[in-house]
Length: 312
Ligand SMILES: NC(=O)c1ccc[n+]([C@@H]2O[C@H](COP(=O)([O-])OP(=O)(O)OC[C@H]3O[C@@H](n4cnc5c(N)ncnc54)[C@H](OP(=O)(O)O)[C@@H]3O)[C@@H](O)[C@H]2O)c1
Image 1 (tube, protein in one colour):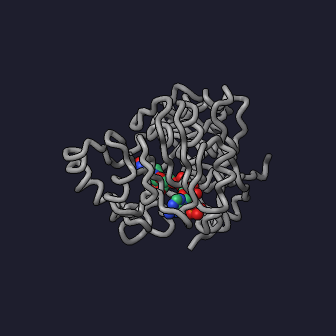
Image 2 (spheres, helix red, strand yellow):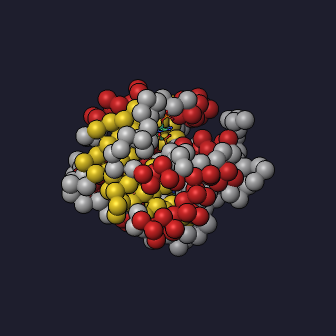
Image 3 (cartoon, protein in one colour):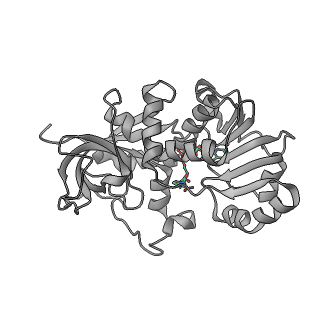
C-alpha cells in the first residue's frame, strides 16, 4: 500500500544536509522493497518495511547544511544514492554529505537522479570486479534496465564485445546503446547456446549456478548483482568449489557506495562517454504508477519522478 501523506520536514544531523528534492529515480530495489521480494529486500524489516518512504536516487538543492558539513552549502545542487536510509520519494530528505556529489552544470536534475545506483553497480561490476579488457566478450543479463544500460555503455567504453540480454521489446534499445549482440530471453537461453564469455554481469539471476558456469570461458568471471535468493545461495555455497575445480570465478557483486565512483561517472557524462536514459517521468503524486510501470517490465533505462514545489 502506498499513500501520499503530509509528514514533518526532516531535520539534518551535524554531518547531514537537508535536500529539497527536485527529481528521484525509481530503482528495482524500490520495487523489491515494496513487495518484500526477493527475501533480501526484507533485511532489517522481516515482517514490516524498515523504511516507510522509498526512493534512493535523489537529486536536488541543499536547503540546510549541518554544522559539520564542509563540502556543501545551501543552494548547491547535489545528487546521490541514499539506499541505506531511503526516503527520496518526498519533497525533502536528509542525507550524509559523504554520499552526495555536486551535480555538474551540464547535467539536468532528472539525469542526475537517473544515475547513482545503476551506474555505480555497472562501474563496480564492469571495471572493478569484471576488470574488462579490450576484445573480451561480456554478457549483461538485464541489459535494458537501470544498471544494465550503464553496464552496456561502460563495457563498450572499455573495449569489450558486448552481448545484452533482455525481453523482446528492449532489443533495439540495447543495440542503440552500443551492444554488438542481443539475446531475447523469452526465446533463447544464453546458457544453452554453447557461447561462452569472459565476463557475465547478471542483474536478474534466476538460473542454477551450473548453467552460468557453462556460459563462462575457462578463466571467466560471473558476478551476480541482483536476482533470486536461491541463486545467491548457490553462488555462495558452490562458487568457491567451482573456482577451485575449474578456475571460473563466480561471486556476488556486493556494491560499495562510492563517492569517487559517482564523481567518475559524472566526469564520463561530461565527456559524453555515458548517458543516462530516461524512459518516463511521473509527478510525485504518481509514484505508485511509476513503480507499477517498472514492475510490469516495460521500462527502458530509468523512470524518474519529478518533484514540484509550490514555491518554484
Ligand atoms: N549487488 C548490490 O550490492 C546491489 C546494490 C543495489 C541494488 N542491487 C540490485 O541490483 C538490481 C538492479 O536492477 P535494475 O535497477 O537494473 O533493475 P531494472 O531496471 O528492473 O532492470 C532489470 C532488467 O532485467 C530485465 N529482465 C527481467 N527478467 C529477465 C530475465 N529473465 N532475463 C533477462 N533480463 C530480464 C528487466 O526486464 P523487464 O522489464 O522485462 O522485467 C529489466 O530490463 C536489483 O535487483 C537491485 O536490488 C544490488
